[in-house]
Image (cartoon, rainbow, N blue to C red; front, side, top):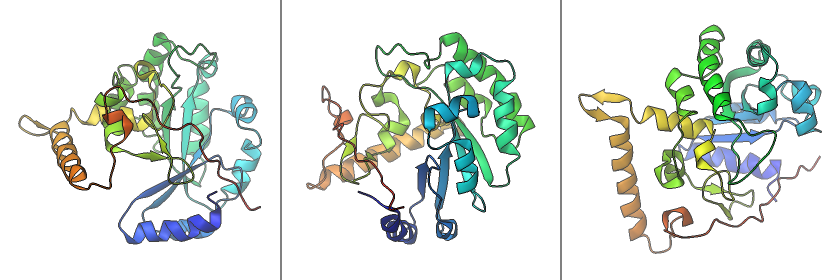
Length: 265
């Protein structure tokens, strides 16, 4: 199990190595104040909608508890938009306005609900829903400074990468369960994600930005491709390393016996 006292040791060590770390939490327990002083470390709190949706889905990590546990800290807020949140006009702006006004919040970033293959659930967005989100969020980003949603990223929600092999984030990242040993495959979602309906904020941002021009015909994607090729070549020279299963054609997804993080409190 990974506990706070272990992270107290791990996070400074990663920072000393020049590694940027993000801890994503539900905010169900207090965020250690000492983490705020660790360079290259950010804390993201998952807040999935206004209390009417979040408190049911995330209990016991309710709004009341989150607000208490982030007091005096600096965090990012991560919001996964589901279909029920689009039923009421003004919902998106009400959420953004609330968290934009909170002094603890540095940035608000957004994902869309990402289903598994053949999943039928009330949370899954329709293509029309995704178009609406892509249309309505960028103007809110202009109005509320803490919301990070460029136009290009919003449009990437409508046309996400078609599979893990074409997803820059999947190719650039290796994801582990809380034991820091078990790999989560084929991407951070695990299982069999429906890439055609992916709403991952990082995947969408990278999918968008790789098309941005640097100089002349040179695009960000060219640098990413070259960097991945170099990294892959170096990895092959290290015989003790084994590539993620998503890079091996026909390989199954990784282990599903993920480890839960427990608090000592």
